[in-house]
Length: 402
Image (cartoon, rainbow, N blue to C red; front, side, top):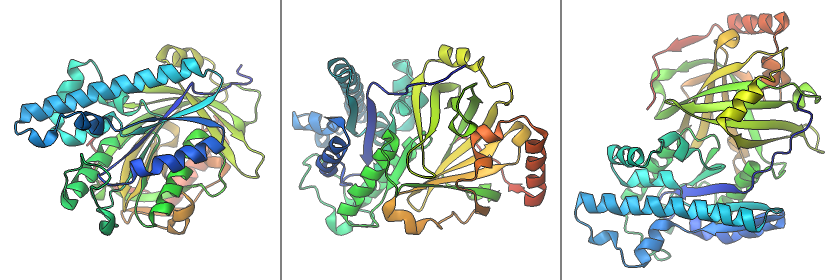
């Protein structure tokens, strides 16, 4: 039985990504100061492409496809090396401190600057999978380019490596965010506020990734009646398996493990949900574990529970990131929409995509916690069946990984 588990990552890696002139570099000083105030040592990995360009390898002088491909692969190799060296160094040098590495772009950004088939071929040569490269980070924040919604501030003055027009910047911005679709902790920060508000929302989001309590962060969950699947924008389909473990804690504060991935590539997590001193507020801590550890812990499943399986459809709509969970097995036909809002977007909580019809807000309803839905009782089964009948769910179209 698992009585207590201390879940502390040796160091968390958070990616700041986005289109050109999105505010990634400009926000780093503010983020470093605020995270330091909360007891974190903050380390910065600068944008690799800018570092390479500043040494004289100028992308503007490349007129052949092969030259560009070699340039992007150089960025890939340097990025991966920087990340591994930084992570090992700060873990070894400061073993007892809370640490976070902020990365100005991550590996999946490279995919936006080269043909998809070339990117996949590069990964294959290196023995890597796209899923594991994408999901290696603790969180990913996409800052929308100023060329979309704040055009008057789009400039290349603070980055001599920037060569894109506003139209090109918007195109790169879209490609970049699509490349991160499916990451377990992915958020979009748009330009609906001024830049001060934008970096404040960015800090709110990072705080959520790191378990820093901020009362204005809010996650909403909606019970879904139906989905017009043929209207879904570009999406990624993630397969998730969750197992509740035996524990001395209450059901609401349970420990569980999760298998998450797609296309045959999976990552494994150990999570604990615990209450804070603030009323009705919870923090979920998690760490990445090896497949063998997952399989071993799986034998400690709470005998009163079933394994919960679901298909998560990740997409964005109107610059907001959504996750649509379709449950399987005993909970088949149950569909839940997840969306997170920060302080500055709280007034936008009603922005449900038009192709998703919801029955109501179930945020905070204990019946929809994983620990509750996993329980093997006739009462839960009947409730699920009754809910399905009441919803009269209709589905349209089919889904494929995109």
